[in-house]
Length: 81
Figure 1 (tube, rainbow, N blue to C red):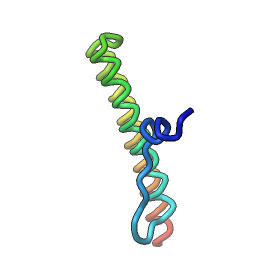
Figure 2: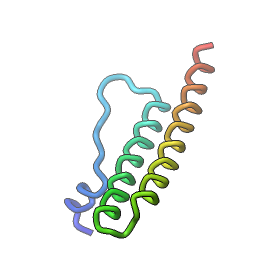
Figure 3: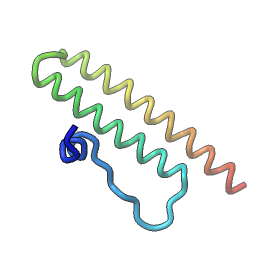
Figure 4: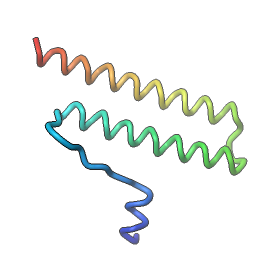
């Protein structure tokens, strides 16, 4: 696949400053969430998913993101203790 197409489909932004591994993991999870929401939105716009299906799928993705954030924050608080 063409590199410019890969860069468009799977964008990556570099982190600035000191970054903890937990922050990198969450940032990757957040980027994956945004990408999947974009796909779901496109499917909905194209008539492939109903509004209810799109909302349900995005809600599930949000719960997964929230769970990962909570787990990563627990790891951060354990490191500080």
